[in-house]
Image (cartoon, rainbow, N blue to C red; front, side, top):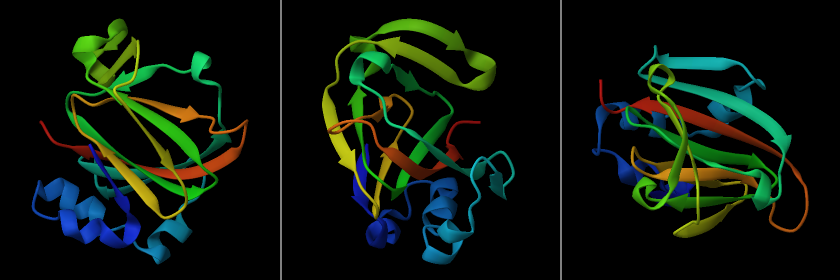
Length: 152
């Protein structure tokens, strides 16, 4: 897991070439060009980004998700949300879709971060993450989510 400010994105270059492509896109012009729900391919299925707008939810309504082939970058554009992170070994698997690289879990977080505009969170394969959580009541948030192929 990496939690940082947008302006620090290039500090993390060199971890993986596909991650580099995503980090290099964390620029105001690119982020402002994103349209809600529209997938923008930076390198086909290897690196792409989608903007989402939604209402945050109480923790009781959330669940953890994890991936084995992709990492996610959650980049807050508007509003704020809490994201919980845990290792899947300490959680209970409730759904598994290998074809979609999606694994859902229930359980308790190991760490929590609050993302506000200008913040991003990288969750690697093996970092189960519970997103969309309220900080002090429901809020409308908008964020960009990069999907980055790491294993494939």
